[in-house]
Length: 220
Image (tube, rainbow, N blue to C red; front, top):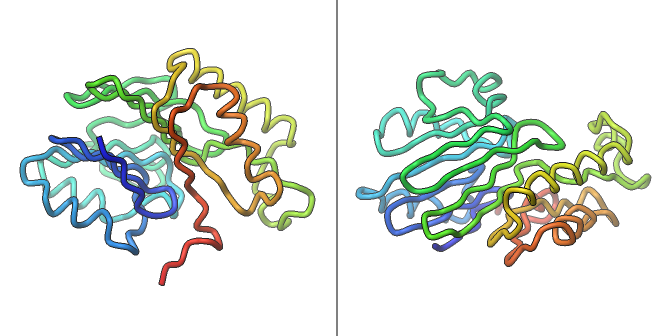
């Protein structure tokens, strides 16, 4: 399995007979489209953790509708907010539910924001965790007030919820091979709080930072 970073929170896991695309939004460096152009004999799965604009590309439903080997796995809120035809998804992701495909098994978990986070187990046992917007959104007092106002709970409530989600994931998956997790510069000095709590709770072999394009990625 090869794991490619696309942009922001977007990744694609490349297997011999399938591609698994997580939270594709933009492809400014041309990572995803060449892979998709070489998929005549592969299944493609698009996993969408939630409806936020920076985790969703509106072309995906059209692509899946036009290709019988391309499959859509959106979260429940994405289907509602993006008005996706309910007959199109292979499955709609709700936390606590599992999905089985010929290439992987998937379980969805709660998020500290909207939508879900997902854990996939590939056929060879490799475990992938994509957090979506699940993080300890513990904004320092010095943060932009607009960002702080988006969080509807206290910092202590946020932390308790986040740690509870991590414990739920650990119960099912004590070891994660590849964790795709937010490292968001808007959190300032607390940017690594969530990632370090993840590493303290679950054995993670490879941590892949994401969501850091707010101010750091060059769209060029």
